[in-house]
Image 1 (cartoon, helix red, strand yellow):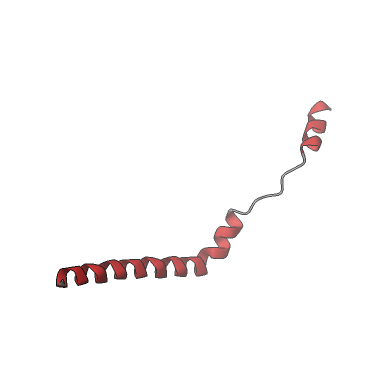
Image 2 (cartoon, rainbow, N blue to C red):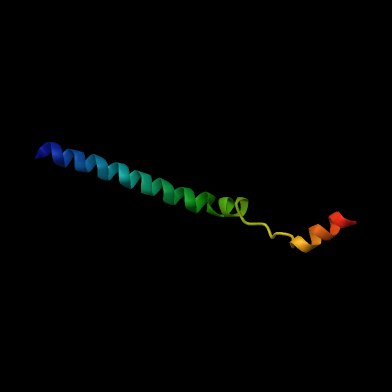
Length: 54
């Protein structure tokens, strides 16, 4: 029973540590990551096809 409780404490501690690190990372780098992976507006296809014909 004591071993099971120790395992539960270890798993809980690891889970809490991971959750806290992800939260801190999101608070610090969240905007930077969103800007880096933001979708750029696509150029309409008819403009690119028109340019290729000229």
